[in-house]
Amino acid sequence: MSPPPPRWFTALSKLFGEHKNANVMQLATIAEAVPQVRSCIVRALISPDGNGHFPTILATTDIRTPANDTVQINWWIEDSMDQFRLTGKASLVPEPGNRVFHSGGTLAFESLSTRDFNGEAKRVRVFDSLSGHRRASLCRPTPGSLMKGGYEEAKDWPETIPTTSHCKPK
Image 1 (tube, helix red, strand yellow):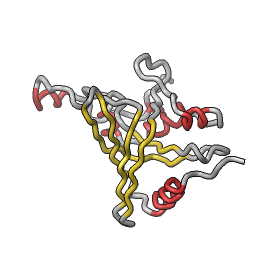
Image 2 (tube, rainbow, N blue to C red):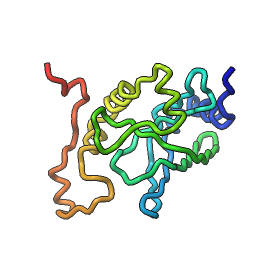
Image 3 (cartoon, rainbow, N blue to C red):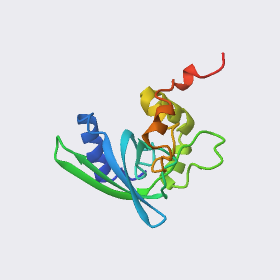
Image 4 (cartoon, one colour):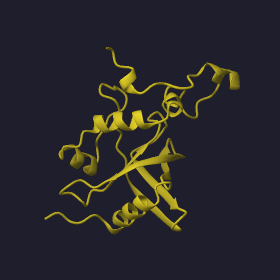
């Protein structure tokens, strides 16, 4: 029999279900000895069947943002006045064939992969659920990079892009 999920995950899952607008957390990593903090939208809380002791927080962020796999999360839920500060390992779910970023590497992610969890299908569903503006932000220069042309450069950036279902060849 598998151990139950940790108490923090049970409590967080309950609050996440009750407060749908409390879906923004801060994710911190270290890249080249410099702290990197970003706000991320939480998309789901997953506890693999049979492996409740490997809870997973599914969030979206720009994969190009400098980071490593050790992360710390600070999640404040204002309505309930609860704060969660968690340290753990991150896994990326890039598109297939990505030669720069690779998925996996954590026990929780590997557990999901062996339990009929289709990371690619979930990645596409999450991407398609983003607003066209948010999808376009993933096609712009890498976050934190120098804007050589200043704000004028931004006028050439895509403002919106369609979902993957609208991009597939007929």
